[in-house]
Image 1 (tube, rainbow, N blue to C red):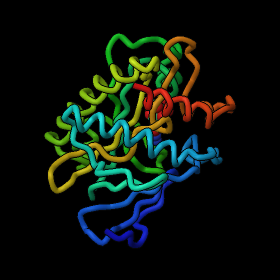
Image 2: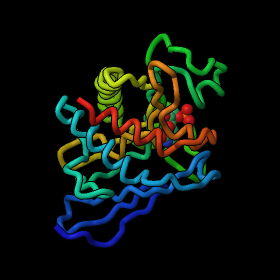
Image 3: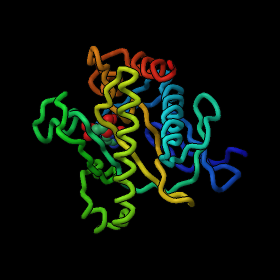
Length: 235
Ligand code: C5P
């Protein structure tokens, strides 16, 4: 299969067409942005690390019965994925309060939520990815009611699988963002799962092992991503 022209360049990834119209190639970049693109920087080797971390997590989810766009890791920075049409919706899953929920609702960062919270955002850079609910999704025809139901079920299942897996690596899965797409075989998990899109805290020291180190200028950003990968690679 041949890599063809670039279809799309995002903040952290490029997507390329391939000679087989059912597949795309994703290239992971080292570029990092935060606060809707206001803060920009580079995290050394981030693309390589996120490609490896996402590969491990997609393989785990596939094994546990969650369909994903992942086909295989091609090399350091590239992954072969199924062609999907991404829903313009971000799903945020929160087990502990941190980041925007702490700010919006005044819940202390680090508090365990009495139940898992699922939130939706409208994927729109110009509007700053505003929070929406299921009524907005239907009203704006971003997805059907049935599609939203499937997306919610997968999201909670993914949270169960990943939370258990990460705690076995001494990592608390605080919160994360998911994106889904429509493939010719139905709804699948798409995008990536990495320290760019999740909050990971060391379960012993509570040290942050994710992009908050970049957002909040905590230093040792690359070291945290390497630490996550090392723990996932250990049996
Ligand atoms: O900023 P906030 O607290 O709402 O983020 C919740 C989780 O979703 C965090 O893990 C963050 O990294 C992730 N997220 C993301 N992309 C966005 C918004 C949030 O990966 N556009």
